[in-house]
Image 1 (cartoon, one colour):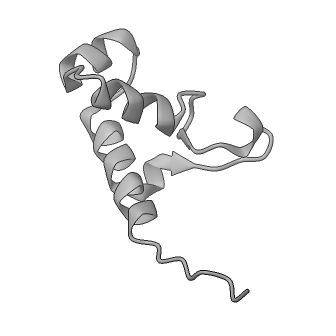
Image 2: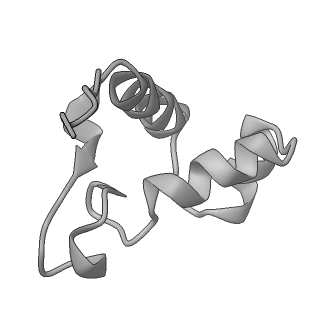
Length: 73
């Protein structure tokens, strides 16, 4: 599923996008967080598929699972 997300320094300054587009993962996540439905988002972004939205959610889950450790003072 995550193969739908690409990171290319030459596209959108290296921010994660949906493959083959300039649609930022963060844009999709923000729209979902604002309450838009998958259908509304797909209607606003021609060519966007449900699997793309699911990939954005999966990407966010992976990021949330990273564990950071505090630096010793």
